[in-house]
Image: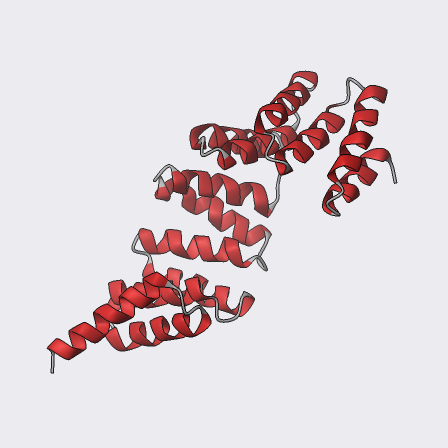
Length: 222
């Protein structure tokens, strides 16, 4: 295991100061290798030291023309800071430079979602689901994006699939109810999903409000 690998393990174990010390050695020993700067930047990012993390990521980009990991890390930094146009551009660069995993496609899709460009988000969220089919968050967000576009039948498939990956997830249950309301106007099915969401999370305000609205409607209809 080399020092970069040791440092990553230390970071995963929460031993950040030791990771910083090790990545400092890596940079001192290999000052023209971008990997050490990316790893050091990721430690700083985990510590919310955004200003210095950006410096290290940009240094990695300066050292090597194509370094997708640095662009991905910059994308995460900008996303965290709600600088979504810059996050979108960095994730896009990471993909163009060869990064091919569910995370980068997911984050690019979510950057478009945050920019209220839902249509553009769809193909990237779909690709993230294809690459990481066991990830409930990818599946859930793709389902939500489909619902926003009125593609209700496919949205239901994705939200139900989320429940197979994350049993009785309150957000998936609530959104299934909301989709059935928008798609078919089905109060009975929607009520059932809202009730299940509240059984899973008694403080789910959206499910609580949805259920209250249905109960009020039923009371008026008597």
